[in-house]
Length: 310
Image (cartoon, rainbow, N blue to C red):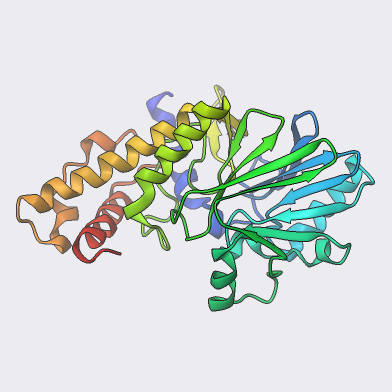
């Protein structure tokens, strides 16, 4: 990318972050769209948020409703493709910005599926627009409607405590919300404070995703959020919804190197609340969405984990 475009793109990535613009999109990008990814597999985007759904001749499997307003449009988009009912709604995790809004699907008889720890999360942090799951599971579960199925895998706490990885069968694709967002895995978290993030398990979690991809022959990752980019003409455009599966390994390396930089500084005897000022950040300056101030906030958050275990 030409250097003259980098400040513009950095501004986009810093300002147009998911929680801040769930129903909005940058100028030049349509606010909502539905895209076919493969036979029977579609992505619905609402602003920065992207959910997937599977269509069979016996019904539809939907993921994250996003919000009550989004779900209304989501349902309308499904109706443009099929007159089959929505049979299941699968939660990726329990965070409000993905799990809210499912009542419209519940009203037509859909059953809601989530990893079992999501129930405790919803009860302890209730939201009026979140439908309680009907079906829960521990480590693995498959939701099947007709000739389509969604395989669900749980590898412990990561982003939240109940986030699952999904494979929309029969396609060799991985959908894992908020943990890996292509086109690459080397990027800044939209919130450098990474709330409800479990550092102690993130490397193991991503290693499990790597093993899953290898075992199941997965070749692509579906982006759960829109990533704005600049095209060759310098105009704002969305990055591709599908990215190479190598983004999982890139994400793992990002966390390994970020955490190692903090740990190395603390091992020198630097107190935790000074570490973010001491770490050499030059190896991270090419990170997508990089902003030095925000990156140092992330380093401070990692130091806090190493200091007190949270």
